[in-house]
Length: 246
Image (cartoon, rainbow, N blue to C red; front, side, top):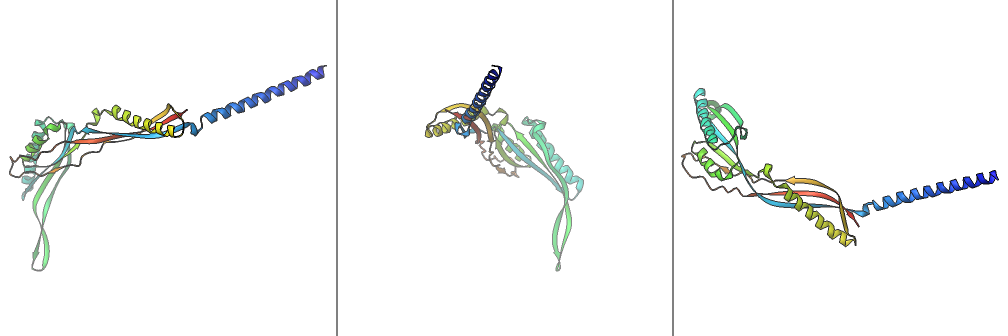
């Protein structure tokens, strides 16, 4: 009797273990079947928008030349002082102006004496470059005129958008909608329906800038500068989206 009970107990326990193991295998199989890559769809969507340029940057060059070194330096210093005064008049903050270059050297003159080529040092040259950021593009023409009138050379403007106040949400939403539209087409083509979003991430962003327009100084002063419209820049964003397929 006890031996028969022991056999039945062992058989029942073994049956339970087999059923439990089978159920575990089935659960794991079902889970991985449902989460296989065939049940997901990864797409990329891109969207771009024209954004008005709001910022203009310039390089302003000055130089002083004279046979006397101190005189050459003084000429350049006087021009720089006038440039800084113009910058101040336009309300450009100190953080938006940077001395990019400052140097002095002797000009070298080449000449021929008989059949021999020679060189000699002549005048002293002092030059300086200041980069300036103007955050009001409506004042670009007036700024160029003001710099021209002090006999300095201005190179620019190089227009850009105002990245700090860019409406990125609209562009990102547009990129997501493009991705969703693409996913819906692909899902329908495979006889499936688009499910919920599993993950989303930004791929990259681009804010192309207009090429700089070089404007030479008017030596005579008082001449009107050319019209320099700010235009716009194309801003593009892309997103990767992983959708569930039903």
